[in-house]
Image 1 (cartoon, rainbow, N blue to C red):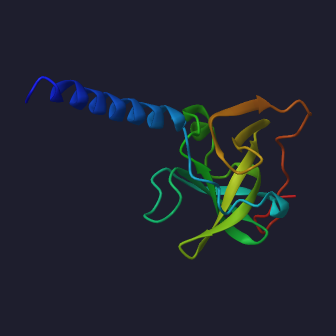
Image 2 (cartoon, rainbow, N blue to C red):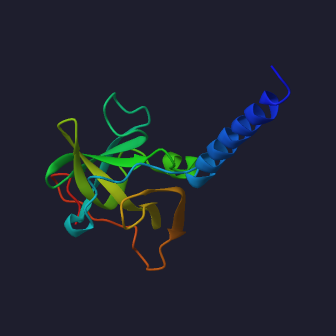
Length: 160
């Protein structure tokens, strides 16, 4: 290479690297795809009893922790996401009464309840924001109302 080619080639490479660096910094590190199926207008509150926790989700289902809840309408697969704290996962077990606020989404033909809030044993765990995006550092707080964690169940497994 001649001396006159080297500075031009170096400038081109430097420009490409600068553009690549700008593109990388322009995208937030924790970016997630839009919550396509979460519809705040169709949120429901489900009261029920935990029947099973699944940490390794099946192929094609939303990644992360799933809790199966027996409620008045049968068993519901509630998606809690991949960011649930170890403490919360250990506290949730079969037989625990829960209240879940969320919205249903169909993925690959199967219905999932995308949990926005999980309430059990006097705790309220925020799983998603109001737009349906998963929160990486869930906020968990103890309920201040006395008896907020207590649910009465009837004979068919539903909660009131």
